[in-house]
Length: 409
Image (cartoon, rainbow, N blue to C red; front, side, top):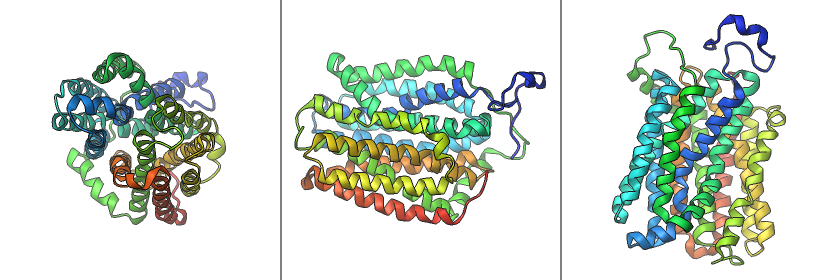
């Protein structure tokens, strides 16, 4: 595949083996996109820490308030199907910029919700606009960061998106405690608006190659990709992984491990216990890259299943449960970039659409997670985790076909 060249040739002498001429600087690009990934994807998860105050203010129950997360997730998944082809057509930076403007407005609008139906509608709009970021960001990495740094960049960005599930819950809980739950959305909107400045300064336009690929053709790539059995299996396994991921953290929020139920500080510490994994996995990326992406997918899914299965028997013991969550988060963090690499390798001519389908499958799964936990609430914390482990085993089985076919990007 040919790569765009936006740096003049006379800069070649200053290039290093890790940063060939023509590629964007990996470090500032990765840092910016990782931070934005935490902010944008984290909007899905902020409400998990706000369920009780939102329920009180909107005149409903915490269980019903989980629909504000589900509505966001389904709209987010649908938005991926739009933003991926738009990124292929107009370039990642353009779509990220327009999306940030729209998401700023929609995020601020959530603060005006007077009741649950309105909050659900506004959260749906927020999800649709926030979805412009992730497929465009991952497509930007493929087009603008050199192969030597691309795997590490993808690992950092996807780890940031996963870290959002914990970081944004912690941040939302802290802001809401002092300023109320509506302030969480005001702060998010302000950060989105401010991020437009570094986006325009750091990210580069993506040159278009040829004039024959219209917008309709970009959208037409989506059904073609779904007709590929191995890609479809990857997408379905991603649904299983992300439904398990969000169901687990929803269980922590509303079911509560028996030993720490009702202790908000202990639950916060349990959420945060998985964060070291999101630092360790990017540092280990060069080692993990020695394995093929499909193999990493299968191994990571298997580790996630084992960690949650162990957690189902350790729900009454906080420290062992925290270790199980740490291993689970490490597995998810290792799986995400491996899935992106597998998808990209099998769709070199429609990477934006392929990554959009991946993101769509992620957030279909993420949207199902809260409802899965709600349906299983009668089983208790350990019972919920046991079912989540079974869902992850299904994900392993769905990922196995990727081992039989490996294409090199």
